[in-house]
Amino acid sequence: PPCSSCMLETSGGFSNSLLFYRPSSAEVRRWAESLEALLTNQYGLAVFRHFLRSEFSEENLDFWLAVERFKNTRPFSKMAARAVKIQEEFISANAARQVNVDASVREMTNQSLRLGVTPTSFQLAQDQIFSLMETDSYPRFLKSRLYAHRPENETLKPFWIFLSKMLTV
Image (cartoon, rainbow, N blue to C red; front, side):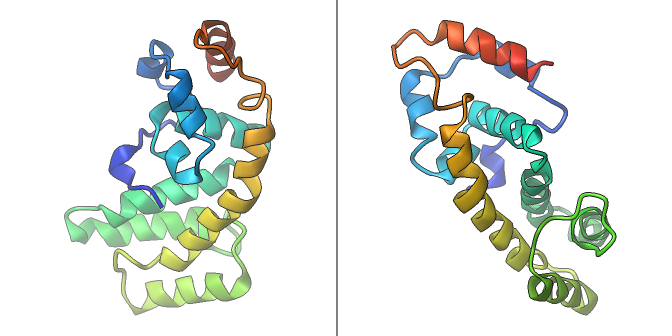
């Protein structure tokens, strides 16, 4: 999976700096190469987030990004507090934004946290969510109007104006 340092947090909506940026058609075509290629592109990440929001599955991406940030937490003394937030928001049986990991992964993650927080405490759950996005959400994204119906010419301006309007709503 891609590194978090390559990504821009876009949970609040479409980043203002991206509203004035238009990726090249080659860059957009690279999004179809892999989920990693999509997530490591700031604009691609924002468009994918918008797609997931429309499918009511944005929590998968939010969890994945939260774990990426968690793994890079410094100083390590802040890790435990972040782990609790992630566990309560996404992993707990009564989490408001519970991600769809199987029961064994949920239990192993909880057990890992009980034994002591480390940068890999959420790895099994994160890997399962990445795999879910890769095999489920990502292929649907590639067939969606957000991606599949983009203009195939070199001047993507009308498409990006349309997309920017959609993403800022």
